[in-house]
Length: 296
Length: 302
Image (cartoon, rainbow over all chains, first blue to last red; front, side, top):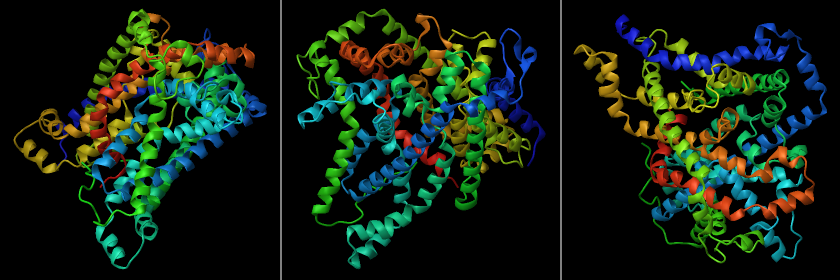
């Protein structure tokens, strides 16, 4: 029963939120014009010189750009793949444990890192990986030479990827644990009667049971391959590891807000936004097509 | 709400494999706690032992010096206060706007014709952004730079939370609403008297999400706030790790950096990190109770 009076209430309820979204999301989209200008704040958006695609040409000519793109892709894709594997393995382990109290204790410990900020975790990890930190204490105890992990181009990517997996594996496992509780218990009983061992039960019942969820989550993750994690990298990197650790987002921050090259940084940001949007939209489209998933 | 199965699925004797599973799980849990335990130990140790790398999981030469120093440091207290104000103000704005938007969006297009347009608009703002520099320009041109508003207004609408709440509202039986309409209730009355009381778990979930987000964010404080007395805690702590500050490091040689690393007050910074974690630890039991609802609400729907 459509009712005009009610609709008026609905519009009024939407209004405040929509205003905020317009100011802080839509208006910046018009600021994208800067990417095609040689923007000078004093002249404003309308007075600045129009330069067409010059900023993008400069971007693609830049040797730095391909390195940054590579860093972003390698870090983001490794995080997705290893993160998914770790979450699935952990969810299976949790599912195989029958002691409820013990499970609770484990979950309490494992979910905690998700809620801590990268500022805090970066301090913790720089302690751990420092020259005198516990990792180097262990290395020395085993007769090795201590390494400056955080400023080593060999170690920086593994540390970034590893600490992200560490932070999120428990949290990411929640969705798989939820999927496992939906598996029909009689399947396991039947398998027990047939004498299936633990591996066989995991392989033939648990994994197929959560396969739809794995496919769905992997599809949605496709939209994230340009998000290497700004907060994390920003808090853990340094000029010594730009070669392997500088990502698009940190590059945009430095060129735009530190070196005040507004137009160029906007162009780099736009490059990322467009590809990111395309990936995300395709991911949602695929998730809808193959898994019947819709965000709304 | 999703409940984890409480009855054991299969009652069997404990085998070697069961023990292996328990050990593997314990390993996962310990791995997650190692950095935190290490930081606690360092924060209670004396400076020299920490700098020499003698501390692992137990304080060496136990002392409370770092914590006393924090109590005496004006900036830490001020930043803590700013962060607390920001959490209260920011979360209130987030919740008010989320509730107001989620309710009309949960209506089917039959009852609210413009719903689809609004929905596409909201989702588009979630998926596409103008980027860092244009957003920064907007905040600057609004004249809210260096005020608390720069920290709470740009993220006033947490779109992800709106969608979570909208999905929750959708599952509330429409018959309740119809009955109220027949009695002459307005949508406004229905939202506050029927929908909100029935959505306590969902509201708790997104409130906690908003609190954690506001407490943990540091970057907006870094780019929008210049005065020290308005600096949020996470931004302040971030500025302390000067060793990792790219602009400062660019001018140093690896040897100098090595030296700096050893010199920086490990114990003091570790103590600051521990105190700044406290609010999260305090709400953690509630977080744990509700966030599973949130995740499942977000991913699995009718």
